[in-house]
Length: 142
Image 1 (tube, one colour):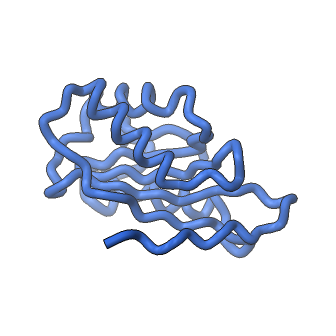
Image 2 (tube, one colour):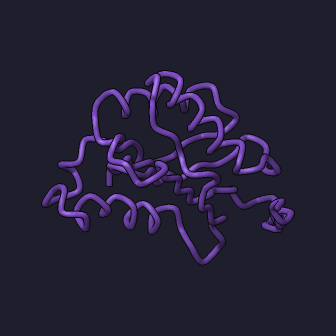
């Protein structure tokens, strides 16, 4: 069964296009909370046609805020490129769940609010007491 067509970006040309994206390891295996996976993620985000603004790697999933260089670029291109590059660099025996969850941020939502949500994931999961203690994150320093 095919996917329904994407809704076109209907935001004003003066507004930045930023997506909140989540993608998960198949079977929710804990394979991402380590230095090698974090290095592979950082490497995978180089030379994309996207700017990864902020991200947090959890043991079994990744949350990211990212914006395309071309506002009509499909978000599936971002997740597919990162997934492919990470698996290749890690020579991974595990796989990703198909697709990703994505949300186009609108005027009433801000990247800062989403960052505050995703940065707290390690705290809510009981992995650290304070979010700055989680080493597998990039982006906003606030």
